Amino acid sequence: MSSRGRGRRGRGRGRMTVSEPVGSGHGSENDAPPPAAGTEDQDQTGGDDAVSQAMLRVLERVVGANVGNGARKSVSERLRSNGAEVFRGVSGVAPNVAEYWLEAVERIMDDLNCTTEEKLKGAVSLLRDEAYRWWLTVRQGTPADRVDWGYFKARFEGKYVGAGYLDSQRKAFLNLVQGSKSVAEYEAEFRRLSQYAKGIVATDYERCVRFEDGLRDELRVLIAPQRERDFAILMEKARIAKEVKRTERQNRDKDRYWNKRSFRPSESSGDFQKRPRTENSVRAPVPVAENRSRPCVQCGRAHAGECWGNSKECFRCGSKAHLVRNCPQVMDRARTGGQGYVQPGRGGQ
View 1 (tube, rainbow, N blue to C red):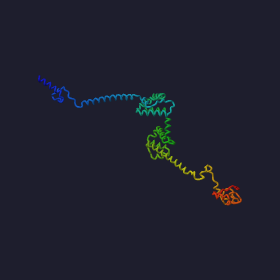
View 2: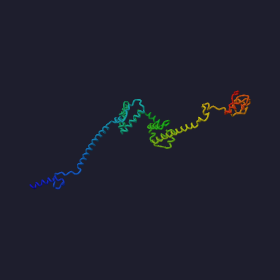
View 3: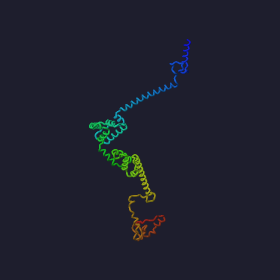
């Protein structure tokens, strides 16, 4: 009995002593080894990763569902939600209205990255009333393999835009010149009409040459020698040249204004400038100067009017009692600082 008691006590001591290494031969095989250092932290981290991954999967499912809903929208709904309008093809619609509608729809479809098949479906879905009935007629008489986006555009333009309109716009482009338009107005018209002449101005070089030819002479002489063949840069140079010519014109106007003022007579230069200027006073001839230059045949002096040279009267007062050199009036004026005399009418006092 003593041996079994000792054995039990030995097993009891082995369970109570944690410092005894595992596998030393003293412990039971069923005893679990002590946990390694950091095991609890690793378990916590693993739990966090599992939660994060689960949340990520939930978010992916939600986002995927939303994307699926967006992809399930029809082409027509996507076009209408982006501003595309319907086309009814009312009789007598202006060619440019149909043209602008087709351009706007195609631009929206390009923004949505639609395929050619989606473009055809989307454009047809926007047709209403007469326009849709027209397309049904066209579609019925055409093989299915020929009906694509390019075919639709060609038939639509032929029906609602018309070859006559396209030809007139092409001719307008060929005859386009700047004239009285500003550079910005000329550029806008050039860009608009050039789309009807893509075969004529297919490259930047051809566009630049055609644009230069239409400029006014005063601008073309500044632009053409530079031989700029980048259309965007050419536009900027044309605007700069326009500003240069405008500044030159303003400077000339200022110079002309100041030149006129410099030749204007001064208002304080004497009695002549104080007299009112009339058309007759400016343009009428002055016969007095011609008469003074002709000497009198009787007295040999230059004077106007009747000659008193042979008379015995005073030239000043008309008195026969004295001559002009002894005239009291002349003497009085000399003493008072008079400036001479004027021959009076004969017999005057």
